[in-house]
Length: 264
Image (cartoon, rainbow, N blue to C red; front, top):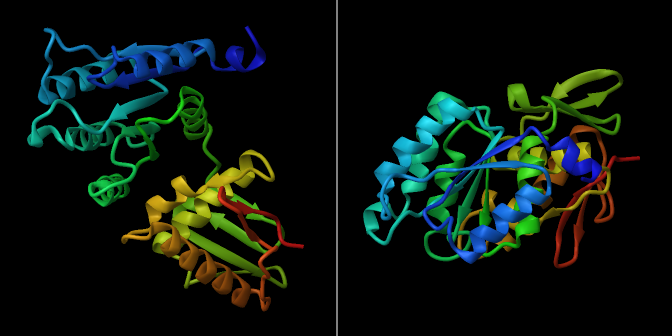
């Protein structure tokens, strides 16, 4: 067993997906186990468990096993009433434990139902992310690992900025004094927090477009994200009397994502 597997050895992942026997999900489960995670699969009694049965069994497993993270599908079954059943399960989970990381495993990362899924995950106060159902097992494991190893409440960006997640604020530090940057809030603050969490985990770490686009809405989420990033850089720059260039603070890595770097 490698060092990473040893590190994850005692971490339990609760898997809530009515397609857990599919080839795709078996590959994900196998990858999790190879990486040293212990998987606990929710399996309602009977061959055709309904969304409500999955909800009941999930809450029971949450209390019994105390998992370190949850891999949760959005859709259960073929009925319209279960199209977003996973979001209902998510809310019940958060009512009991709003600190547990939850990765929403969904086919709605793109398409007409994307905004519904994203809006619902953002409406709960929890450590939630979502990933395309067709993502590789390696990507699923990577995203789960990042959710579990989230950044601390306060993250410094160079000597100029401090992100205080506990108070949902970002501060500019000028002449040793902290001043709240009032223009950075809402979606722009959430984007900055994602970028800062990546910077904290590993300097130079890239945050893919797909992860940041959940904070953008409309038909062209990539263009909307680009506008928010530009506004974010302008607001941060004004707060410290600077104008950040394209190669400073937040960098667009062509066709891949954004990277936050410490300002000089």
